[in-house]
Structure formats: C-alpha cells, structure tokens
Image (cartoon, rainbow, N blue to C red):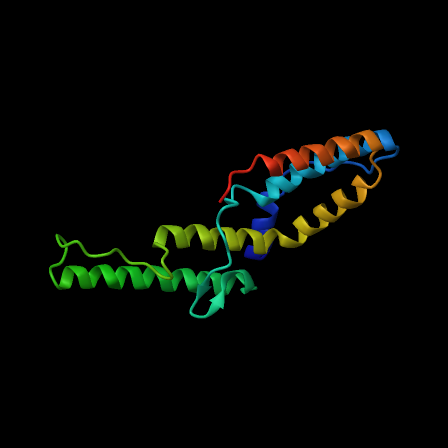
Amino acid sequence: MSTKTKAVAKTNTTTAISAPKTAKDVPATIEFLKAQLTQLKGNAEEKISLDISYNGEKIKDVDTVKELLEISASLHAREAAYNAEVVRYGLESANIQPFSQEGKSLEEWKKIIAKAIHELINSKQIQKIENAIKELSKHLDAETQLANTLASVMEGAMEFVK
C-alpha cells in the first residue's frame, strides 16, 4: 500500500450509509455526507491560504506529495543554515530577524504544507462528496431549501469584515 493510500485510509473512518430511498431520507443523508466531508477536510485551518509561492511556484498548483515534501525539506534546511550563520557570526543576542520565506516563518510554512498535503490526498473524495451533496440538495423539500438558503445568507452577513 502506498503512502498516499495509507493516508486516505486513515482519514476515512466513517461508516457507509445506504442511498436514500425516499425524499424524507435525503436530509439525513446530506447531514451524514457533510459530517464525512468535515472529517476528510480535517483540522486544516480555513484561514491558511495555499495561494503562496515558493521559488516561483504556487503551493496550490503543486500536484504531488513528493514535491511538497521537497519544499518542506528545503525550508527546514534553509532555516537550519540561517540559524547556524547567526551562531557563526555571534549574533545570538542581537535583534536579528528570524528566518522567513515569502514573509512566512517556518511554523507558518509547516501549516501551509500540511494543509496542501492533506487537501491533495483527499481532494478526489472531497469533490465526490461535495457533488453528492449538491445533487441530493436538489431533492430537498421547499421548506428545507428555504431554511438552508436563509442560514447561508445569515452566516455570510454575520462574518467579520477582513
């Protein structure tokens, strides 16, 4: 089993649900799929953007885990080398700016890379579930559709200005 397959198997621990047989079953199926979607998306912080470049390539456009790991290894090696140079020149007590790349610290890069790996591994399953929710939502009764629309509108209206 490949590393990619192992990671998907670890994140997909929910039990299966049968297809809804009647319109009354649709809301429960949608809720189940939303829970599965939340689990697949994991704890990856929504605020973390993958629209950042590393050596001219957007992280969101990287399409292999290997390349993401190479970027991570490069960042870790560069930070270690930077810190070694601080020591070499006796600047430990000086107010030297910590290592950063594209204005992000190594800790921020770790979160970015972790989110990118997680999304890359789970992207196909996430897309299938999102499509299933979209299709099933067409079969909700009018009252439930209105309630969902109102909840979505209010959620958007209550967001903080960025």
